[in-house]
Image 1 (cartoon, one colour):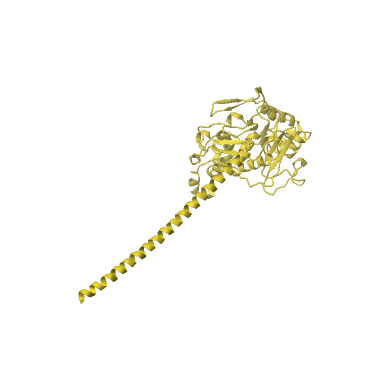
Image 2: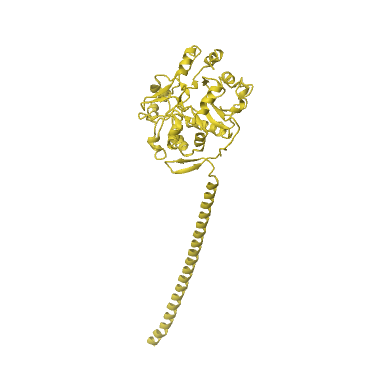
Length: 399
């Protein structure tokens, strides 16, 4: 009986085992179906994304193709081509204009001199743009010369010496001036600059040269290059010079369209804080920070990186007399010598006009001042001049 009972249980066990295997197969089949469905969905999404990416790529190519008439600049370090946001027309209102770009702290203390400078000049041959502190308006209550009324930028920023805000303000001035296609030359001036010649002479001097005037030189002893700028900015492209430029339109567009170099400068080129007795021992730590003055390197370095150095007169048109001990004072912040009333003698002004060359000791280079192979005076402007010195220039009719 026991044997017969065991024989009856055997088929039941086999049936249970078979049922279990069937359930496992069904479960496995469901998993396989689920996997296949997800695989098909993934493949479909991948194909869809590929088509979408291809469509976007083609759209960008068409956009770039339609902008081919714009000026282009090639950043050698990144191999990226950028297209100018403006199209320079083949014709514009005659005559071409000089855009005078004033970088001021607040008002124009020498407005009376510049008002006389522009008096009698053809209004269609120049434009005026002023970067002042935010909210400052040039009107009858803030300037003695009506020619400056309403010339301030509406998007000005707070500017600090030795900070990237300085070059940002310069870029804002260029950006505003580029909106007028007749502006073909762009002259950056400070609020203490004076002209050394009349409008007609300066206009023809600047317009007759096909080049920009940018003070630019290589100083191997310079320690302002920050290795963290590499590889975006290579050390062999690092240049130094005065910030006071005169640019042709092509180069002005390069400056305004730049995004890479400016962003690197803003991050890695910063002035070291001056020594402050109130900070005590903290000064030791602060003075170990890297020191860099953006406005003395940005434009020169950018144009060199863009392969445009051979399109420059590598000198500024603005004369500056620096304090002889300037190199030792850099940590505390130094400034050019200011011409007072007694210093602005006819003899001294004539000496500035007679300068025919500039020597760059770091390059052992003598830059002879020429325009189209013709010898010309090196400087058209000078700084820094006090109100008394400017009044003497005006009263003695030196411009």
